[in-house]
Length: 133
Image (cartoon, rainbow, N blue to C red; front, side):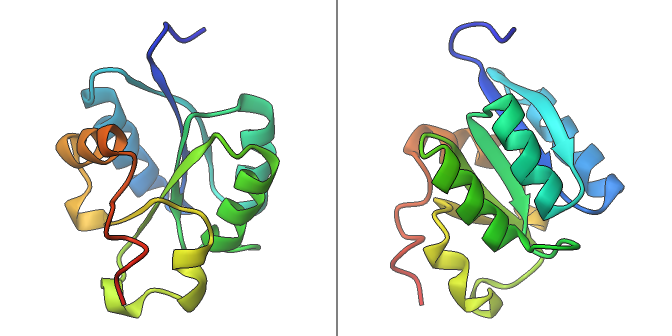
């Protein structure tokens, strides 16, 4: 069981190398721990229901339901979960519904690291995320 104050993280990506990289980032960030990993949107929704993570790191392009829809379903079932979208898209190229799914931030995979994870978590997400065009 996680210690008090530990952020429980579910990593969702269909690419094992990125799941490994994200696991390393989470492991290097004090106060965070990986509680599960999923490789599809459906698996993410199921695992989120079982594990009750505090944070979901969600890829956008997934087999089956995409990450945007998976976030929508996860947050509908457990509103206190926080979701960050991660992908290789430029912000201007994100799917139109990415901003309205309930995720509080978007991070390009190339920029994802312990300092970004900590900063976004401590700030409650990216305050400019919903206002960006």
